Image (cartoon, rainbow, N blue to C red; front, side):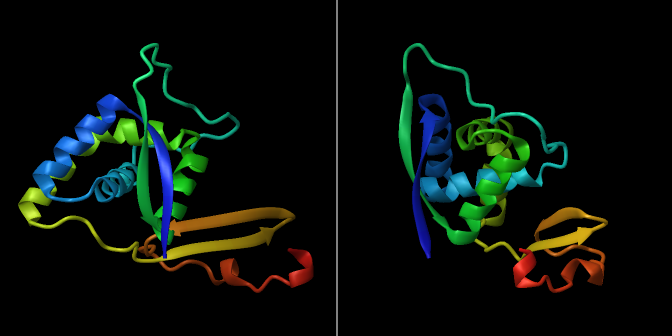
Length: 160
């Protein structure tokens, strides 16, 4: 099921993305999803805890535009998780990704002759309680080593 939403994006970021779309022959939504996926794959990005969501700097010229985006359900969850883990607004993640990864995304698309249009291979969301601590495990993909069985113990409905 598609989820229609909007992002508040600076004109300079939109221009970068639209130029890439013309080269790759894909929609703006598809390019945006490809950039979000590339940002999540960057191992240098670290989660940020104990802080508020960071937004882009203000622009005195008010060159911000509302961009309509269509996500699949898994893509929408992915973006929401990124916002929560990195403590960055969706538009800031997108702006950083456009500047850092857009060339790589375009090169890969041109080299492979296709756009990254695959669903996420697996999504694991597990909650477990260990020594009184509530722990959440979120996996976007298949872990290389098997996960401990203790992560998947049933939780009684009355304890949720």
